[in-house]
Length: 107
Length: 120
Image (cartoon, rainbow over all chains, first blue to last red; front, top):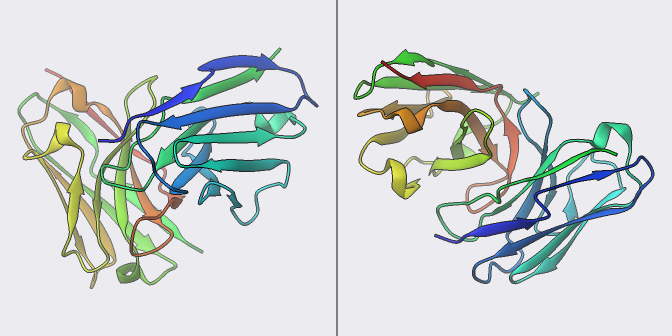
């Protein structure tokens, strides 16, 4: 199975900050990567698919980049509603593994 | 509007069985790969199983192979997860999930989740 790692595991930020979360795959996955946002007690929400395509309805302050093994999720100007946990997921080969998550909380 | 409504969760003893169901509406069910994703209390997401639109192909994470079985009834727009020989480590919220297509794709819709607790 492909192993996904994320860094950092958690960090504190302020509203208005530009933040970047990194995801790394244990082998090349082309652009078969998605990013999800999850808030406590809620189901995850798709933000980005195909590494860099913004899901319909997701604010443009979210962006994704990368291919192969290294990927980034960037939030250009952090808003109060963005404090959450973020997961990457590869769907290049089964089982479709998730990263361990990155928790973004308020500084 | 896409809706995914899970049911069937609950408390079960180790070694026991449970069947989860997910009633889907708002899209052409047979056109999409469906998956089950779980989340243990306070933990991250774990993809568990997936099934092709026709039901002819199924996929599992190694830790559940031989114990959990995914299936679908396209005439009823319903996804299932038969869970046998349950272990404490299977305790989690189980989400039904729809992908963006009938092939490798991201998950664009999730159910609200159903809690499975394996404990004596």
